[in-house]
Length: 229
Image 1 (cartoon, rainbow, N blue to C red):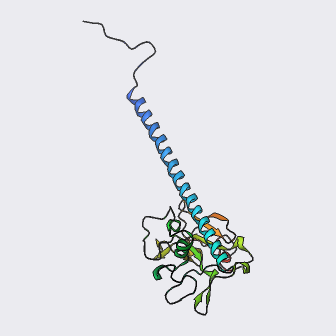
Image 2: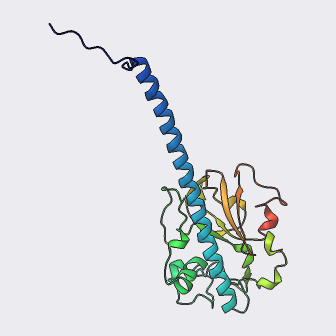
Image 3: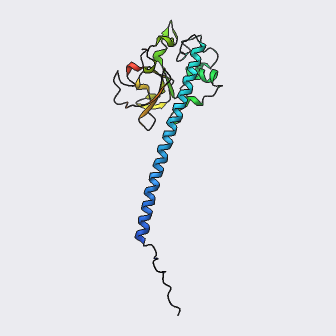
C-alpha cells in the first residue's frame, strides 16, 4: 500500500468554521457595497433632478425675456383663457411646463420628470409634471392668470420659483403636480427627506422637509418663501 500523502509543511486546509467566517465577512462587505451603490444612485438622481430644474429655470428666463419681463402664468385652464400660451400646447396641458417644453426645448418633456419620481405616480394628462411652479407669482388678474414682473420681486434669492412637487390624496403622494402654494405641496423624494428647490435668482438648494412638521414662516420652505417678496 502506498504511503499517505501529507500536506506540504506550513500549508493546511481551511476548517468549516473558517469558511463560514469568510463567507460572513464577504456577505457584510457585499451588503456595504450594495448600500454604497444605492446611495450613489440616489445621489445621482438628486443631481440629475437639480440639472432639470436648472434647465427649466433657464427656460423661464427666456420666457421672461420674450414677454416684457413677466414670469409665465402657472396655467391656462379652460375656464381661465389667457393670451400667452395660445395654441402652443393642447388644452389639457396648457401649463407652464408644457409651454416651455413645446417652445424652448423642442418638445422634449424629459426635463419635466424627476429621476426619483415614485413608481406609484400616475401619468394623468397635464399632471405628470414633477416640478411645481410657485402659483403665488402669477395671481388672477381680471379672470386671467398673469405672471408678475420679475423686477417687482425684490428678494429673488429668498423666493421659491420651482421645486419637487406632488399631488396628494388622503395624505399619499399620487402624482407629480405643476403648481405649488406652500410646503404642503412639496415632495421630499430625495433620500426620503429632502426636496430640490430653484429660487428666483436661479440658485438651487437641496433642503430637508418633514411634512408632518411644516416649516416656520421665516425658515427655508416657510410661507415667506412662497409669497411675493
